[in-house]
Image (tube, rainbow, N blue to C red; front, side, top):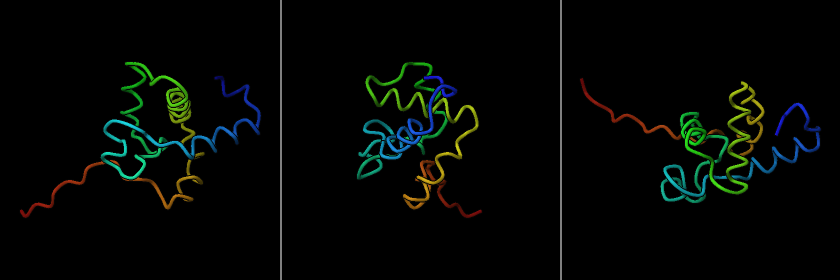
Length: 102
């Protein structure tokens, strides 16, 4: 989809659909991030790069992930901030370093 050709209402509907989409499998799925997995908007860019190189999942999930990747790559990640705030903030996906005494 070319984002220069999308109208405002279609973009609003797309953002609503994205706001309700969670990663259903894998490293960021519900097994590791219960109950629904990580929201697609909070997946790290490296994860999107991996899928872009190896292929997107089939179906609507892959389409949404490809669109989110394109939005993020253009530097427009700020469009996801209202949906993050509505969920209570970004879901942390980086593993915390263990505290060490030096």
